[in-house]
Image (tube, rainbow, N blue to C red; front, side, top):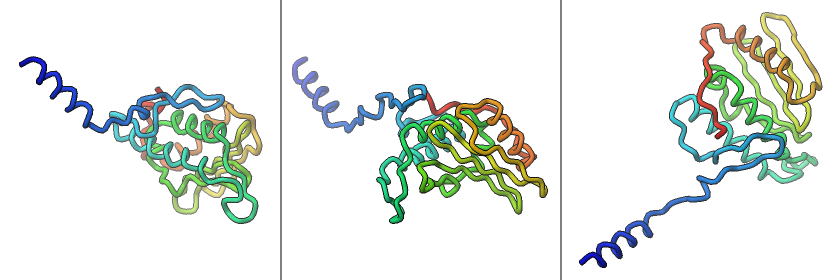
Length: 178
């Protein structure tokens, strides 16, 4: 009697579709180990960041000349840098980003853009450098071609976002990285 139960139990588990590859860590050059983009975070902030990270990860599949004018595909290092930045930002500001606000450039970099009325914050992230431009209240702020990672530049981005979204109360959301 025990034998059929074990066989039935084995058959039950064998027919359940499990994507074991989703549980394996994903490594990007110059970045900490990450969980798969299909990992189910516990908060809405973490889930939103996870979806943005998956969208950015999909840029790797574009292939060179993706725009028909010789565009370069973003490297895994640039993609990893964007994912690091998304994870470093407080959840309220990451929630202001939508898929269309994350775009690959023809130069192999990725641009993140926040906009509210006439004001905006734009960050272009590459393999080893990134640029920051913001126009808030008619004042232009810019840090072109800084090295990455750069804690001071990240703080400047956060300061600009705090002005752009004064009602958003920043708090750190669960990170997408494992």
